[in-house]
Image 1: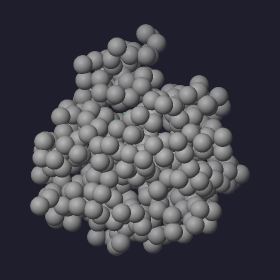
Image 2: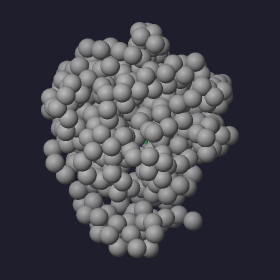
Image 3: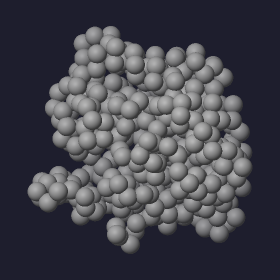
Image 4: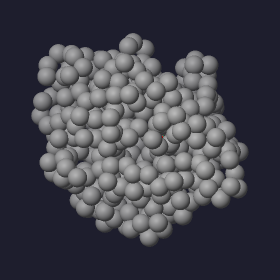
Length: 393
Ligand SMILES: Cc1cc2nc3c(=O)[nH]c(=O)nc-3n(C[C@H](O)[C@H](O)[C@H](O)COP(=O)(O)O)c2cc1C
């Protein structure tokens, strides 16, 4: 009997199975960041598809942390009714939902936030937007901490079952954790303890505002794959131990930033990624994307080596494995060897929202997603999330 479909405990939540929908940006919110019917429909389908826990796409906690037009917000009390409608609809369909809280940091394009992107340090330019970031002051950092705490409170006020703090993929909290992005020499940078301080203060502020008993999950990079050394599996292991000490319920292990395609290994759809770029940027973008093809090719369970390294230090904190999870037999192997406690998928659920239920019913053993990454290119270019395997319009 497969362990995948047995009920399992994550923090104080009982999940109907060990499958999680990993946060996936939908590009479906309105211009104010409010929830739309389109978004609700997507998650009702996943709940009907019997996914154990649903984590929708990252929600920006502060207007300066908005990474994309079309992103859902949680930075203002006025957004609570929409978020509440989403939670109620998922609950009514039998699902559980966790909101992923994010600040896009230096990866927020200036054209979206209308000011310089916030970062630990002001060096260089973002590889995607080419915008120059501004180094965060102490006051900015305090505002970031307060924004996460208030956003967490809004998530729970809206009825969410848990929150996930987004510390992966090159966004602000990843940047503070990373020796590549964080070149500060004050209490917020310069050593692993200092780099971790912002995340620690955010977790403590959330626990104080929303209560110690709330389920807090973290998604973190285990490798940044930046041009110079960033987070490595060794550093991630140290951070994971500290997260366990802070009472975090679960850790989802990921990798990559806007510098590379390691987050979503698979095809690099060069033409589709350049789809909305002005003609004069396309030749340079094509050269850059071509360099990604080999190092970021698809591998099954591509964060498993990092998970194996981290698992021994996490104690009671659950470990969630994401990245290239595709077949029931692999899922079973990971669980029976206790290499992770939950399995999380993004792209397979875009194509097959009913995948979990169909697997449980024995109708399929493997996701049909081919990791072509056209879904990724689509939302990157402002199109709503769906499977675009046959091409962008
Ligand atoms: C279109 C798209 C949007 C994504 N948006 C998010 C996001 O909002 N937050 C996040 O943590 N990861 C995001 N990811 C990464 C996924 O959660 C996941 O970590 C990654 O796709 C690897 O899992 P998979 O092989 O099952 O797709 C996104 C991935 C895709 C393809």
